Image (cartoon, rainbow, N blue to C red; front, side, top):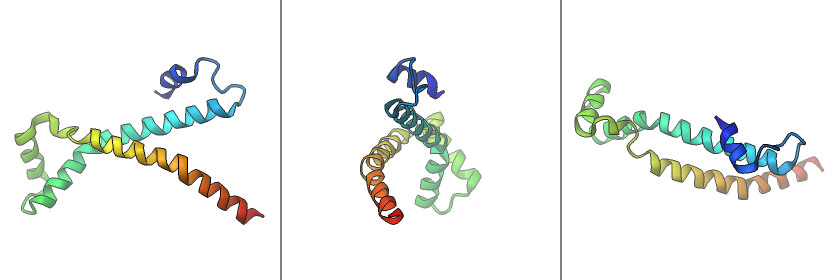
Length: 111
């Protein structure tokens, strides 16, 4: 799944030579795609949880019936785009900010 997107970004030469840019790009694409897939896969249980918190009288089966009655099949993915956007922003900030902080801390502790 990652290879087609990776090759579209960095070409067929890839990171066979072990270059840091290719390796980083491949890792970034893999993290982003895994994040998106897991977020979409968990969206329906997330929607059920939110609805059950809003209406504590609903049980597990009744929340599924209620969501499908109100929103149909859209209830499976409804809201995923907002969670994906937030997740990708956080992943980007982690990579840009925290990675450097962790590397500095690791250097300081190994010295």
